[in-house]
Amino acid sequence: MRRARAIRLAVLGAGVVAVAAAVTGSMVRPPVFEPAPVRATAPMGWNSWDSGITLTEQSVRETIDAMVSDGMRDAGYRYVDLDAGWAAPQRDSSGDLVADPVRFPHGMAAVAAYAHEHGMSLGLYSSPFNEICGQSPATASRGHELQDARRFAGWGVDLLKYDWCRTDANHDEQVRDFARMRDALRSTGRGIVYMINPNSSADARAGVDYDWSAVADSARSSDDLIPMWRNIFPEPDIGGFDTTSVRGVADEADAALRARPSRPGYWPDPDMLVVGQSMSQFLGAHLDGLPGTAVRRSALSADETAYLARRLGISPETLALLRNPRTLSPAEEQAHLSLWAMLSAPLIAGNDVRTMSDSTRALLTDAGVIAIDQDPRVAPAVPLSRDRRILTKPLSDGSVAVTLLNPGDQPLTLTTSATEAGLAQAQSYTVHDIWAATTTVTDGRIVAPDIPAHGVVLLRITPAA
Image (cartoon, rainbow, N blue to C red; front, top):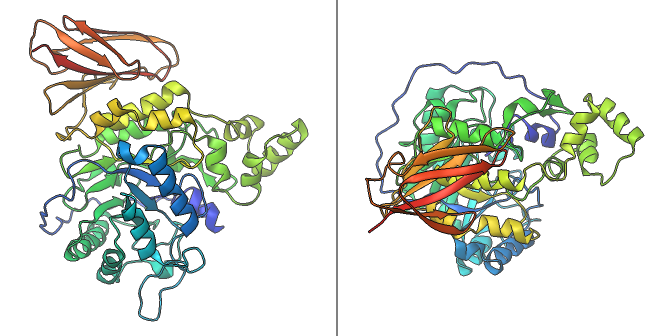
């Protein structure tokens, strides 16, 4: 998970850590372990971190109820993942993890049971260190891997997100620690999806440079995702928020395309979805003190804006950027979901699903996009051009998915063909435009005119029978 070098430092009241250590280039081959994959396609669900909701038994039940009633569960979003904040700050007298007794008075097994009764699955968050990620170091799992894995399995947990959460690390050490928890989870006999984040360390490229497919079911491919198209912060530090350790949607997609490609049972993770979130909501939920106040206030006078900008050491323009009520355009949100689907990536919503708009719900539950993401072939996206503006992905029914992306700031027309996208020569092809909800027949030429700035055309192309 997350927000390690950036937001969580502010949550914990710690100073920004200057990261300069380099990860050693030596390689340790992970122990041979080839279990049958827990599932072929990437998990879909919801994670509590981005929305900043207070984790309680009641708020989790409300989230489960909302996902059932608004159609998210039936669309495929089955995992409810509880991030930092679920655990008591200390282990019990037996050394076991326990749920926070105030927030979860009936314990975590009761939460898992409620999820299962509603056709959902429960995910939890942990770390070998918990030094910088919002949970007490006393609950860190290093040295307790088997004990904690048995605890998770006994509660009925279905997914574990395991975050490095330490500013210094080398790859050899990460392989050993992540593999220990992998083996501990598998030894329980319960099919627990295992997702890791090696990037919350001194090596921000760990998810791109190394192959984690023998260690985990999914690995984060880059730094934390924020609701921006690209990271355009002009200052490296904003009130304790390290802006250099976060990425926008396009940045994350670029990194994921360079990471180990997806296959059945393994999926690169470009982070949870930021659909339906604004920068002001996102930062206001995570920054304590003055920075949080600055972005949460509904209105600021010119004098207040100038004063807060001076106190934060930023320009009034940057403060306005933080307070932007919507930082992804509708076209950018469509591109965000399209790119994650082409990557066969986990689709984990990060917004508060209890209060989301109808438009956000429609985006997240679009059946055509989900079908491309969850296609059982789990094929990786293949760039047709060096600039990655056109991606293609073969699907299990013989069709191909194609994205034509405009990364620029002006409308753009892109062209390709069905054969360039990987289909055999045919007399004609059926082209379904996912977002436009239109179906046409073509001789093979594909033209996407006037794609808006940062927008995408997502197609499913099938040769005529």
